[in-house]
Amino acid sequence: MSNISQKFIISMLRPYIENELPGWGKVYEYFVGSYENDGFWQDAEKKQ
Image 1 (tube, rainbow, N blue to C red):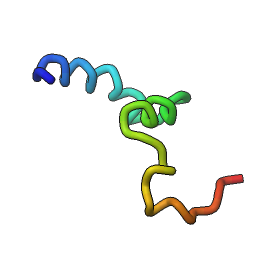
Image 2: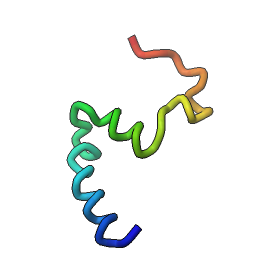
Image 3: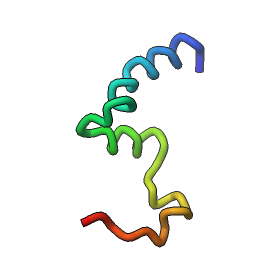
């Protein structure tokens, strides 16, 4: 990925990253993946 496109993506996602706005979880899941893919969280209790 070119440097310009990386800067563009970061500038578009930064408000979500810094403020954890509504919908942030879906953006994170799309680009990074779900907590379910991380073995550290496999046995964690669900939030009520």
